[in-house]
Amino acid sequence: MNAELASKTSVISPFDQIRLAREVISTEGNSLLLLAQRIDSEFCRAIELILSCHGCVIVSGMGKAGLVGQKIAATLASTGTRSHFLHPGEAVHGDLGRVHSSDIVLVLSQSGETEEVVRLLPFWRQTRIPLIAVTGRPESTLASQVDVVLDLGPLEEAGTLGLAPSTSTTAMLALGDALALVISQILEFRADDFARFHPGGNLGKRLAKVEDIMRPLKDCRVASEARTVRQILIEAEQPGRRSGAILLMDDLGCLSGIFTDSDLARLMEGQRDQALDRPIRHVMTSNPTTIPLASRVTEAVELLARQKISELPVVNVRQHPVGLIDITDVVGILPRDPTLPPETLRLPGNH
Image (cartoon, rainbow, N blue to C red; front, side, top):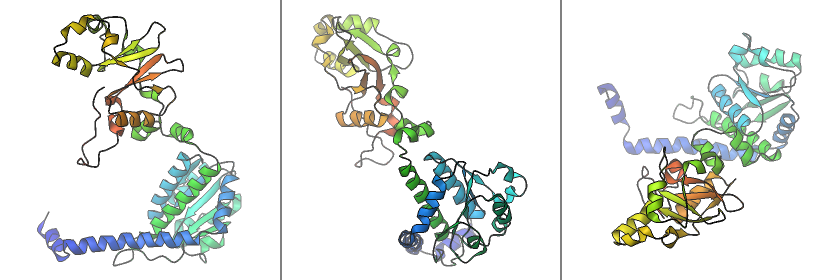
């Protein structure tokens, strides 16, 4: 930190910094409470227009409103409503070619007088595309030429200057979320639909089915419960990612038990070497916790955490093992233990 910046930060004490931050957040939060009370039949008209649209919802806005518009377009798209963002400045330089007569336009402008936005109004009128405006000034040029006005109401921007878009963009964002989520509920957009649009990352893993992330049976250590521990340990090694569990089956091919590295360690610690040459059924964990095919990964994670286990066999309707979920496969989405530091994951123990 340079001397000039250090001198500026010393003017405002840590106490005042916290106070000012709380004031900013409170100002924005209070504006959302007021906005919630302003929702009326115009919101329902906007919903009706979007639901009747056979094309895409084109979201447009300039500056900070445009950045919020990009997020709204992304939220609409991820919750079942086709949508994309159109930059007003780029629109007049050829991007209007992206617009189809079956589309609908959602325009964001706090003042309703943004030059780049107002410049597009003749084009929208000419193509007769339905227009929805999100603005804080229902008497503005924009509001006077659209089909539906979603009025943000009188807003006070946060901060001592009250100039930087803050409260207004927060309100726009919340209203956009309200539109997207109400529409998704009307369309009966379900978790399975959401999962299709979010296959990647940690969120995708949470929404996935167990068969999408499990280790398939061919990659698992599998053996008959009639074989001895020693035989199985010698023969049941698998290349690739090693799991600390051996899946054990009865004569009908059903999962009858599981034997883990922890079970082996307990035999050694108890000096029960003779057990190594007896059928593994005598020392395995019988009737282990399992999860059926088509279950969600979140269910598997909950089972691993609740049962404090590290390996979870996946079975089909006939109770035949089809794969295994190891704790290391889902470590990124395990619930955190509130008694531990934030960076510490709660890792269940072995069987």
